[in-house]
Amino acid sequence: MVKNIFNKIFPKKKSSKRGISPVIATILLIALTVSAAAIVYFVVVPLLQGQGELVLMSSVTITDEDDDGNFDTVEADLFNLGTDTVTLDDSLTMIIYSSVTTSYFWSITTDKEFIVQEEQTIKAETTSSEEQITPYSQYEVKITYGSKEISLGRLFSSMPTNSTGSGEEEPTIIYLSSPLVYRTSANDPSTCRGTFPTTAGYSPRLYFLVGIFDSGTKNLDSSTFDYINANGFGAAEDYHPYIGTTDTYTERITSHTGNTVLAYNDSGLYPGCVTFRGTSFDPNDDLDWPERGIVYMYTYIYNPTDDAMDLDISVQVDDGYQLWLNGEYLSSGKSNEWNKWRASQTITLDPGYNIFTFKAADNQGNWDAQILLWDAGEADSITSLLNVWPLLEPTSTNW
Picture (cartoon, rainbow, N blue to C red):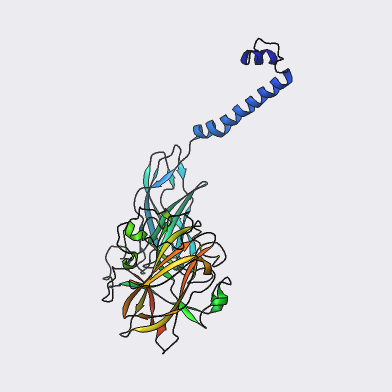
């Protein structure tokens, strides 16, 4: 019978050659049956069962319900565009980015079920003061349902008003600040600490990042192309990003900084050593970018005194770099010294804002960049310097 069925499907040609044997025909039929069953089980059945899919429909709102000056409640509008009901987990994950990135679970207090094509507002809160979001800090909201997760993006908090929308007048804050990171060779990755240029120095950790440009392209360590200018924002060394910068980059860039300016607070095992890829420098940095490309790193050093300071500077970059201070060219280097601190030079930090423009290129493999400042001459108050993120567009008479 099996043979008759097979002969109808695959009729023999009129020739003197022998046809397929009954055993082979049986094996082929079994294989076809198994394949068809697999298609039904893995493709058709899931489609019939349906799947829920949530998307964000509004901006995320955080509020200070207990009027203590920190944010304890978050709201967002979600829409289920899938083909089945979605039920949220009982809590969402609130990730707060600071010198140490910490995750907390905030309880969802609104309805957790979304039927098909339904939009509703979810609300979550925390009652622990240790889990609240402080003003002017970065945070990220992640919501899970079943085996899926939706991230509402990395955001930046402002100054809260109280739960009634009033409250005291917000203070005028022009920047967020952090002391420079004190470092010795023991605080430098083993890959390059053998050439640490001084007994002790200080590194910035607050950066604005823009990139990756020309991701995947080889031999970029000697590139002098100005990607900032190519996107219509003027010369790279004259660009002054700040918290709230809305510039959008579209030319020769991938989305690793969101096609805009990313405020990045470097922490990890060696704060001050920004590691984009690999484990040879700071294995605890979490950027995990692909190899080969260019990133612009902007960092501000604020001199609160009335006097200029003369300091020494050195950089270590895997692979190539170009460096400017307040729009003036300082130095550059290629990949042949990727695991060494480069030759030092003396710079002057003026009163007020000083901005370093640091263009770092990776040829392959590991990728990092770091700056070190120290005072090798007459004693200056280097510990009074602040590493800052401007909240308003910065200005200086020295630019």
